[in-house]
Image (tube, rainbow over all chains, first blue to last red; front, side, top):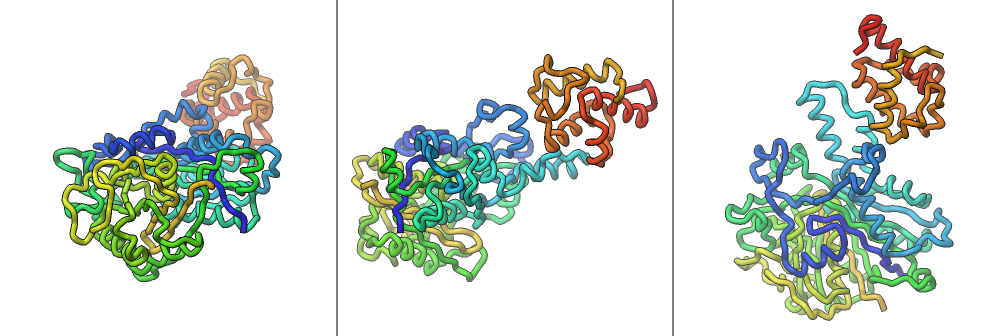
Length: 410
Length: 93
């Protein structure tokens, strides 16, 4: 099996629209969560979210923009950044040996929301002519493929909150097995429209807005945690056959060392210790690593009552004696839950932490929960961390558990 | 193939230039749509804008449209014919 290098990372996130801005915000423990502004948002029980500041007109000419849902805009912008960092990755490459795997939970949800508003709210029959093309779930991946003329596999994974973890893991496998040489892989999500927010509200999984400080509404691993806060954005990576990356003199940011995948098959929402632990074990086995070698875990850490206790127990089960000395943080406390894009953004966060030697904190963790008793890097970032391997967990509604491990570029 | 009214073609130029980033100086009645890179997908969008701007409904038959409308002038003439049929001759939108 070939080894897989990460040679480019691009992000559009509630904490900034490039990896430098993201890393600075994480290191400062800054929250990207705020009160949402929108036409109907006063009708939300909890009008908070982690929105991206993104000037689409600066990125795309008007005719192209009309063909792009917000989710595809994020995906294209993140992919362009990742490719710029990877530098000349397609030179001398047969583009049939390059592809795109994107994870998204809700695809062009904003277009769907607007279309329904036109029909039911405005009682008009004039739905935008490209609604189908904007809303389809594979649009983000397709546009990236078209933009860069990549004729290898182009797939969209939709496994709710683990979608983009799966996309990156599956892309790495394709490179490892020599089916392709280069992949753009990651996730994109843009769920902060009224209809989607209302649907999440109805499921009673959203955190109440913090009365004193809306930016502190997401409280993973805290006794007072009341749910997740939705966020939007995209994270894309350039994955490449390590030999090829070295031969062309590319900077290797990290190596995708392991990928673990399993399914609960028990309940549509309720997480299971057994399933989460199994996914972590499989990723370690795939990476041929012991749990003790992992120097940082970016937790799924949604901030729901159900997840955080279960995830803690699953980490304890897999990590055993080393659990107590392994730092675990939920950066969702700062960037919110990006659903299908969460895994890719959080894997990117883990890679930035490893490269920068700064472990991002779990902010708002003021009242420890006896059920959550690991080192969550509470409140402030931890600098000077020497980490050689990182793990990123994603556990989804529907039960698809996916875990990625990366190691420092040798 | 149609003789479009001057106002219709002027309005069409404005619409094409504004919404589709086409250069006004590149637009003449005889300009072929395919030379403007207007493919079937872009045409769907142009028709949507035309429907709004001229308050008409463009029938859905794509094949007929491809046959009838090859140039910017054809499109303006076609718009005029639809305006006349749907609003009464001479009234426009």
